[in-house]
Length: 331
Ligand code: KG4
Ligand code: ZN
Image (cartoon, rainbow, N blue to C red; front, top):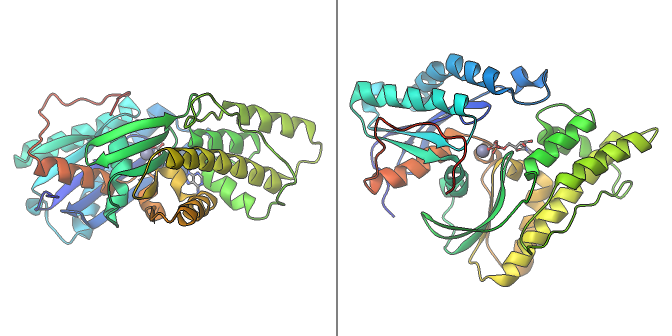
């Protein structure tokens, strides 16, 4: 595998984290993440217009800090990688514009990266899983089972037919009054929950590797309306268990169907301890190596965008000045 062998600056602004990183090949020299969670908390979710504005304020300080923390000067940066799709267009545009401006001023090559490819390759920041492997990618906007044959060779073999796993965490947290961002809040509340006190259903779907989480929110809503004295930690534990069981079931069926050399778990929801433990247990039962990034590389970060950029730039791929933010994108 060849990597871009000079320092590159990576930028990620697809949702509510402004993140900048400096990488040399696959080595992360710095990874600065400025979260907007506090800003969006009062609305109970990400407000796209507010997110874009906050990125505008945070992007330059984050770029400067990332270069500083890497122990470099702007002059040492030799390329720029930026998330250009999919995500909130206003938010993405801030990163894309900053990347273009930096590349234009310094006459550097730059490349737009698919956010999902960033998550998918995030395991390579710390490990080198063998191919082919199965990756469960679970974030706020996506829940997919991806068969990874190699870099750039991805096949989505299963996905959610409605809500993403992270969305299920976030919506359930809102119903339970646990606030935003919901996933981490549910995990914390669940720690003091009583196992088995409540049971929540997760619908099974036609495709053996597909998922559906929209019914879960309705079930949580019904539970909160019918239980006069709702035990919130136990309800949080029931939500977490239902989501983890559904994900583990789909992964297990996919691993029966295909001979993977490893199992990987990526995306914001991969920060969830119960999910990490469940998939790690499944992999060890099957004698498979299991890889999951440290939590800071699970949630949105520029380091993973830098890694995807490092690989694509080394292949000679470049974006041109016409690069634009796109809200939707296939692989
Ligand atoms: O990958 P990510 O940072 O952003 C997207 O690309 O969507 O994922 C964000 C999602 C949110 O839904 C958040 O609630 C969830 O990841 N999340 C968690 C945890 N930390 C973040 N879900 C469950 N447990 C966690 N500890
Ligand atoms: Zn993400």
